[in-house]
Image 1 (cartoon, helix red, strand yellow):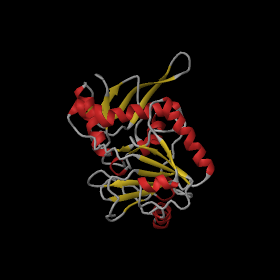
Image 2: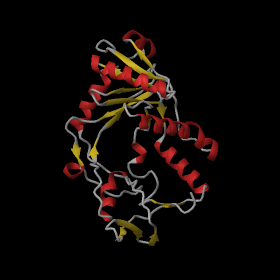
Image 3: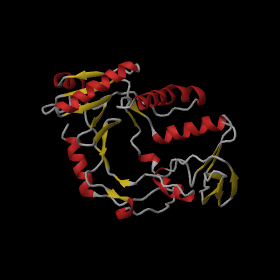
Length: 283
């Protein structure tokens, strides 16, 4: 990894990273994604800690996809078959079996669930810091408080635009390769190189419940039809998801740089309550 440089506009994890859910679901419809997620799980759950001595905050409490209609259950059966091909353990459960696994869940309107016991949760900030430590140990440089202000490009003899360097307030870096991992700012970074990044930032709400007796060690839950997740957070739940009528960045999000370099957003109370009601009706 010698020669790699990571430029952070403020401090690592000070933007949107720290309040991401950190959920890892191993099963996806794409075989490429399944392989990538299996690799990610190995790195986060074992290899990073072995290499750095730091804990990523990995908690293997399992994952549960719930099916509220027959079509969704059939999809989960196909995912289970795909998982078998890649060594991902999973089980399709009946409503009664789901109730046994997750006694607090309301299963009256369920057709079944897909349970993946080796899914889990990582701490986003802890994982980022551990990755940075591992990269630095392998020869990479991590430079904080160094925003990218421009990307120099040139056109070769075949008319192909290529990267020549990166501009920062502290000087230039000559490089033929840039990896854009700027998250919600990825589109702005792409424009510096004349590239349109098909990414739209949206404002989402999440709520952390008070202590719930008996919730400890329960699996994380995902309802694809309601676009809601329930993430175990100690002896409480973090409930979030995607709204049917999302608020886009340009419409309602106000951002500013705070003392910690964070992102301050208006809270869409009505939308947040809608997401929470869809999630908490499972309790």
